Image (cartoon, rainbow, N blue to C red):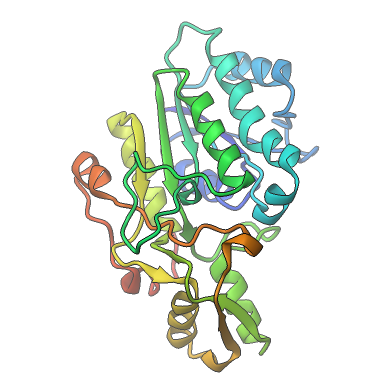
Length: 285
């Protein structure tokens, strides 16, 4: 049984890992909730150091980050604190220990911005805004140790945390309330269902897989087409979905963040799943 610290355990992704991994591991969920016995300010280097020393984990999963993309774009300091300072504090603490602690860090597909509609390789980083810059700088901090795994991805699925909403939750909830939504028809990506992401992390823990990996679905889809797929699957009114063309100068959003998963397939011996099949997942555990 592994001792696993999950940073950002009350967030969108971390809350899933707490539920999924506790079956076979000893889990230490860390969040800013004052009622949590593992309430730690990850912006403070001393607190992070004390936490790791106290628990002496085998693995740290870092889901803590500044995830409000618009706020990161407009406020660099906000993005820096969550996406660079936290990884810096974790790595600095890990360097104090002789024990090889495996650090699993979640990054984003928004470190990419390929001009044509082809999937981005791990080496094809193209920074487009303050959010992607801080996420990439955070990766550079993680790489200062050897025992790391970085995952670049974009996930969807009903989230177990009532405090947060995924992109797919946003689409479904608004359409259920018959609210009109605007979706970009020229922003492309290949999102993954959160349950597949959980399986991948479970596998990389068991096999001690290291390095940087893209994880995504087989199909490239626009945000607009993804919303329509969800609407059709849940028998919701797709006429409420309006499309628009994103302009980089105005919106500061990369137009193609789809990821090439060949490296992942060869290392994990798993094929990227089909997006259509993943939309059918409604029982998570």
